[in-house]
Amino acid sequence: MPQYNDMFELSVEDMELIETALQTTRDSLSEAQPDPGSSDGETLRRVHELLGRLHNQKIFYYPKDKVYVSG
Image 1 (tube, rainbow, N blue to C red):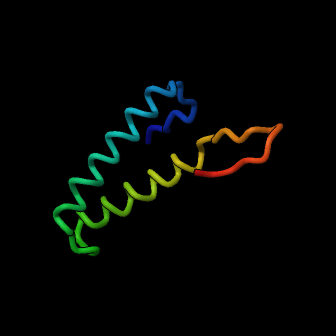
Image 2: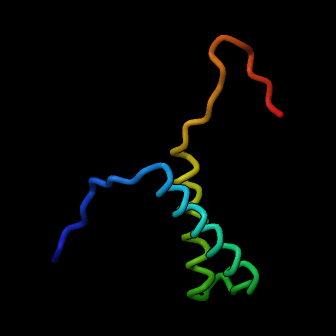
């Protein structure tokens, strides 16, 4: 059985394109309101989880020399 390559060389632009494609897929699957037990419902759940993992890997800017105020 072949093994997966675990060394990826993706740019920030590549990751943005992947994230946009996943968001588009999520939106199209959500419009149909799939049954959670269906294959579309399972795909939608997996897309949501993957988008969450991508979000959690982002590094957000917070100023180090000032108090950060959101909004």
